[in-house]
Amino acid sequence: MEQLLKCENLTKRYGYKTALDSINLNIDRGRIIGLLGPNGSGKTTLIKLINGLLSPSEGALTINGFEPGPETKKIVSYLPERTYFNSWMKVTDILDFFCDFYADFDRNRAMEMLHRLNINEQDRLSSMSKGTKEKVQLIMVMSRNADLYCLDEPIGGVDPAARDYILQTIITNYNENASVLISTHLISDIENVLDDVIFIQNGHIRLAASVDEIREQEGKSVDALFREVFKC
Amino acid sequence: MLGKLIKHEFKAVNRLMIPIHLGLILITIVGRFYVQFAMRSPMFHGYSYNVWEGIINFTLISFYVVALLAILIVTELYLMILRPRKNFFTDEGYLTHTLPVSATEHIFSKLIVALVWTTVDGILIVLSVLTMFINMDFLRHFGEIWSELITSFPDVFGVPAGVGLPVFLIMGLLSSTSSILIIYMCMAIGHSFNSHRILASVGVYVGIEIVSSLISSIFTALIGVSTIGKSTLFMVSYASTGMYNYFWPSFWFSSIVSVAMGVGAFLITNHFMTKRLNLE
Image 1 (spheres, rainbow over the protein chains, first blue to last red):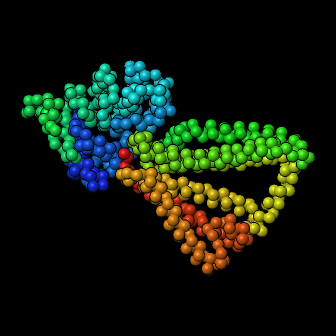
Image 2 (spheres, rainbow over the protein chains, first blue to last red):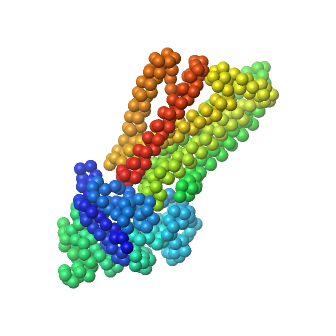
């Protein structure tokens, strides 16, 4: 099977500002990876490049051997850090929309999760709180049988109880051929579910290692290591 | 996938398009009854003049005209600028551009829906005006008026109406298609900038207008010198100056200009939406 995600000398500049600087990175299948770094380190830029919302200034990025495009969008499920649904839509409209466009969307799984979190399918998004909207969006994204899930700050706006349920959902919903890339600052909350971590700073990768390696070699938790590496 | 995009595009724009066009129909029906009623007034037959009746009629007619213009402008503005901009280049773009669909399909789905609704809008506005002011006299003489229109057509345009009218329709379709694509192109270029995106889009549009009017005036001058002394890009001017020998040359010229600009605009939009996408 092809390498799931491969970045070679990936560079992205906005005008004079370099957001990502010659990154080389491979992501294998069957892993949950934390993409960790301070604000403005390039996490969101990397995720947007993976999803074809930005184009690289230099270098290349392939997913399953393809450059970002309609082919890769079939197998990448993306949760952006903002709400992207029209507020007039009802939850059922969104379910229809995802069913129509994503062949891998599992409607039953989505409905089950919606019921579990007490979200009514007939509710309009405009009548929901910010946290509820985020839950709906995350449910849609996790109800696809994708190869790569890119979750940008998935748990920032939701309450701790729902946070646990969502993390549980993430762990149970992906299969051995799929990987999950989670970008967040809330490291201690997700540390237990991560297999690998990538530390990113000023557009450079500071560290890419498995959580077990960090615990063995450094003798500390990812959260503690993060605070040490990125000490202000 | 194009079919599904069109389906969802209709679903989104119908939320505004259906109510405002139902409003148009309602205004037309109410207006028609009022016209019927006003025509019974002695004033209408010139027997007496009441200043208040005059003011009311004038106000209502102004209101009707403003309403028609508003519906026309809202339809065009929404379909050609607001909806595509929001769906492609703001937060909604995060979903739009992560669907497993090519940029070409996105552009065509928006274009087709915009063309369908602007056509419906145009037809309904014409029907509304006709409904408002048509009367038995007009209907009685409709046959004569129509055959007069058909027989005099070749005298002005140089071809029979059966040829000329479809040609005008084709030209109208080509030029609206290319002007919609040019607007998409301006937005796609403008939104590839890192800041001041709306300003940049407008700037690109103004720039293109200046360049294209420059080019067309050069063409006009060249053609003018070599052929008829005075001409413009537009058929109508040919027609009104009685230049009926130039029906086909001007048809081909303006069609080729529309097609070339439309294709160019499409290719550039497609490029900017695949290679230069820059969502905030």
